[in-house]
Length: 296
Image (cartoon, rainbow, N blue to C red; front, side, top):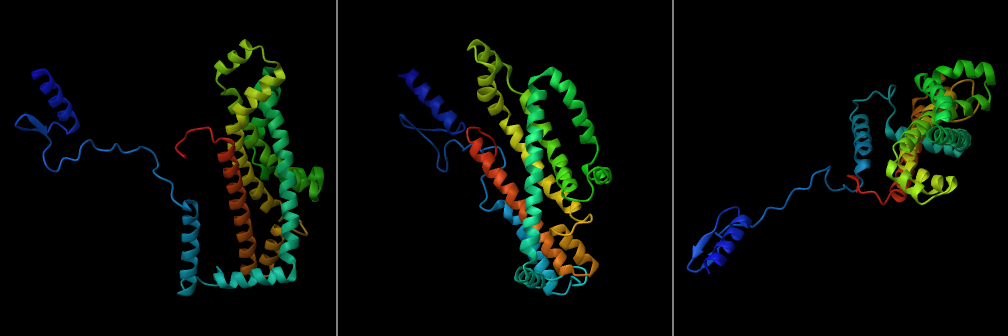
């Protein structure tokens, strides 16, 4: 009987932080005892609805309030309602749609070419020592040279037409795709390789079932950087002797001092960047839903 009493006392003492009271032949907890404390979960905390939109919303709110109170000179930064009017006017004239289609075509073409070349180079260098010796060095050299610094040379090679613009975007996209995909390939757990050898998998099955799924997280990370660099490069190349595109519209508005039109172009670029990054994030969550991370 004493053994049972001692065991119950020790158990209750541990669960109540060492505070127990004898009541006759019973063990009771003192008033106010709430039992074991819930362990606080480490990490960034629960997800916030529309959390990624809070920062941009605060910027827009500051812009609206500053313009309404006269804190912002309209010659320096047009008021939001003036930008909305310019936005409607450009749509009515058809200028915004035409320039948007031209810019989107250039961006998608350059992004597609850069993704294809960067992925192929990463797979070849990641799966072959000879391929790495031939490919990795030149890519690292390109990584050290800003893509925009190559524009004068690209103009001499391709002229000032569409070829130069698309090539500039493709070169900007290629590097992050290669770097992150190549790193992911070389980071695949060697135990998976040993398992594939044990199962006598063919080279094709090994690439499709082990290599590519293992490199997918790195590829998607590189894709996020690539999309951002795609729009950054587009802004620059469209202001170099272009006759169409959002960058051309912005540069033309600069010549005439049309701040509202410049802001319309910048807002469109911002929306394109946010939407494209959001699509990549969505793709990442869907494709990597099996991973348990702090983002989950």
